Structure formats: C-alpha cells, structure tokens
Amino acid sequence: MKKISVLMSAAATVLIVASCNQSSVSPNVSLTNSLDSVSYSIGVNFGSGLRESLKTLPGGTANLNAVIAGFVSAIKNDSSSLKIEEQVAMAYVNQYITNEQARVSETTKAEGDAFLEANKTRDGVITTESGLQYKVLTEGTGIKPAIDDQVKVHYTGKLLDGTVFDSSVERGEPFTTGLTGVITGWTEILQIMPAGSKYQVWIPSGLGYGAQGAGQLIKPNSVLEFEIELLEVIQSENK
Image 1: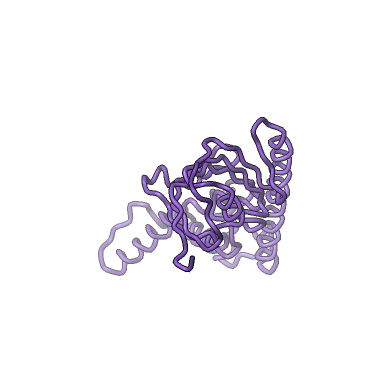
Image 2: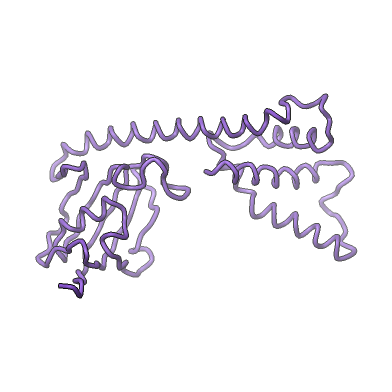
C-alpha cells in the first residue's frame, strides 16, 4: 500500500465520518439547492470510494474512533486535545506503514522459503538451478517455445494459502503473450514445456514480483503457484 493513498483515504474518510458525528449535522440533511446536492455528492463519493481503504491499513483495520478524534481536534485547531502533535503525525504514519510493510515482507519471505524447502522433497517436484519448482501433470508432445516466440496458455495463479489472484480459466479465454512480457519464472518454465503440456509451478519471489509485490493480493516476497497449460506455440516470423 502506498503511503500517500493511505493518508488521502484516511483524511477523506474521517472528513465525512467526523461531520456526521457533529451534533449540528444530521444524516437526514435536506438538499434544498444545488450547493447542498453537490456537497452531499462529495460525501457520497468519498464515503463509497474510500470506505474500504482504512480496512486495509497495514497491521489491521484502523481504529475509526481514534481517527475521528484526531481529525476533530485538528480541524478545530484544538491543540489542547491533540495527543500527537501535527508536525509529528505525518512522520508517524509514514514510519508505521514502513515498519508494517517490512514486517509483512519478512514474514512472507520466511513462509515462502519454508514452503519451497519442504516442497522440493515431494514426489514429482523438480527444482531448477534458479530455484523454480514444477511438477508435470501432463507432458505434451509439441515443440518447446523459444525466447522470441509467443504462446497461448490457460493458467490459474494462486497464493500459498490457496487464494486465486488471476485465472484465464475462470475468464474462459486463453492468454496469449510473448516470453519476454511476463515474470521471469514464466519465461523460464515456458521454455521447458512442450506444447500440449500442463505443469504445476511454484515461483520463488525473486522470479515473480519480488520485494514490491503486485496489487492488493500479492504481498512482497510472495511465492506464487501456477497451473499452466501450454495450448499453442506461435513461432516468431524471423525463423
């Protein structure tokens, strides 16, 4: 999660919630003119668009009461009730998020390393020199793609806890790509697979999305599991 998105989401969310908690404001406010309506619409847009942001704060769901209390003290410029000085607050949020991201990253890496160490001893699992692991489910008889070829595949990508983060199978449409336009683990395994094959593949984080992670589901240092079916090799016209 980017620091700036957390801060903007928090600020916008508490703006709406704090306003609704002031005795002078009713959730049943009357919209008597266009300024009322646009003001209300801003509240709806912030509330619906950013409601989930505080739930994904690193380390758990934000304490909304604390968020509101801090906001109200700051918006009223009530320094006597502030428990954290304004000059310190931004730095505190940034440091907290940095620490939580580091903690999650270290935990995910340790879990991934432990999984790969155990997985390499399981029947049928092959480990390559790079650390990539795979198991042949179906061995095809077609050609193997070269680095400058394209491939048509069906795949399902999962986290180690079984969460599906992407699947061409669920979309019902094969995925076509060049071998250089995908993560390193895919580039490697596709060159091993003959057309018609289906492999179960475990990709170490260094061959996947690394310390950056990807999206909301793939945390930094995540080991990824894929089931890949190589449907077709589309050879380069240069051959």
